[in-house]
Amino acid sequence: MIFRERTKEPLPLARIATLAQHRGVHRAFAWLHLQEPRISSWQQELVAIPAPPFGEGERAAWFADRMRELGLSDVHIDEAGNALGLLRPDDGQSHVALLSAHLDTVFSADTELDIRQDESLLIGPGISDNGAGLAGLLALAAAIRHAELQPVNNILFAANVGEEAEGNLRGMRHLFTGSPFARRICGTLALEGAGTEIVVTRALGSRRFRVEITGPGGHAWTDSAVANPIVALSTAIAEISSRTLPARPRTTLNVGEIRGGTSVTAVAQSAEATFDLRSTDAGQLLLLEVQLYRAVEDAVMAANRAGSGEKLQAQITLIGDRPAAELDPKSRLLETVRAVDRHLRLRTEERLGSTDANIPLSLGLEAVAIGAGGLAGGVHTTNEWHDTRGRDLALRRVLLILLDLCGHLEAGNEVAADSPGAGEP
Ligand SMILES: [Zn+2]
Image 1 (tube, rainbow, N blue to C red):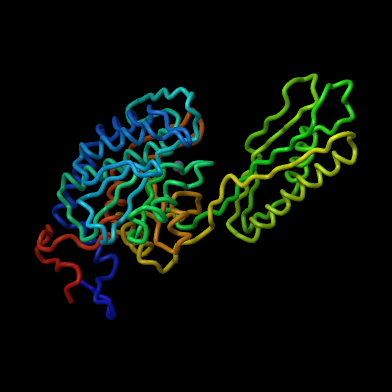
Image 2: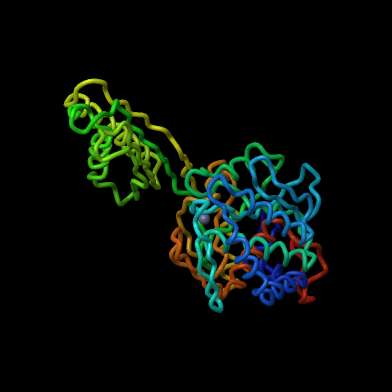
């Protein structure tokens, strides 16, 4: 085996090859391969439990029950609503590696969660995002328990709340700032949807706003001169949407929702819309935010100049803030991902995304969001699908990365007798 001069740590590829030869790791791989029907049934069961933003409680409780069944330690729901469990009892001070998957969906509580299966194809809202990630999380916990793997660092399994939209990453924020594990998490893998080669290493920054314009309103005929919030809001939307945004650094703006007014025969008293601003560059994001504020102020001023009587008022509320950040290209975690992918003959697809990994990355900690296998489409629609074929390859990949993040397994258990234990000179 080739070792690095300075650290006496084996080079990444050799380190991963040794890890993959471990008897216990083989047992875990076999579990992942043979138990696909069980993983798929967990996935269908959990996706049938509604988990709208700020309504993840029932799904979290289901998840905690499964964690207890698998024999995880200290299983509980924390103050933020995250379902947590550990590989072994927490000593309150050692490092832990975090494996997470978000519980929440973009679908409202009344969305019909009709899940269908056609062999390896699963169909239904949230089946991949993040049914695939959550099922993968349970599968990995089960495989590690089944194989009785005992890495140096403990593993914190977290089915977390608040990843989508206005959840604003609150589950992750809590884990990294307010929880007993904050400052002890040595690395994070956030399981996110399908995919085998995907790894999100750059966190896309986003700022989300609700714009509400209010006024006196009135009768469509007798108060026709009164300024109309719907007109002012529409003017602001038309102005901000007509701007050409840079392709590099990629910057986008979406008007996601609009509502207002009460009747066709009334001048509206209020109108509101939500805006999602994203950029890979913090400066462009700020510039676009300034332009949004200006577009709203200009439209309200113009409406007030033209109208008579009481003036319109605008209120802009920040409803989402996700920091932009990037995993250091020289980080140990990225080196591990690349080595695992080479070992498994996968092509590492580094991506940019807005995920739970944004929080640790913005704190300068090593984290990636990673696919839980198979192929998916129609994400965030009610026709979402997930073809689970090849899932076990992706889960083997995540397992190797996770175990490497946790430090070596106890020595003397390798399949090949001639491979020296990690760390030996
Ligand atoms: Zn997701």
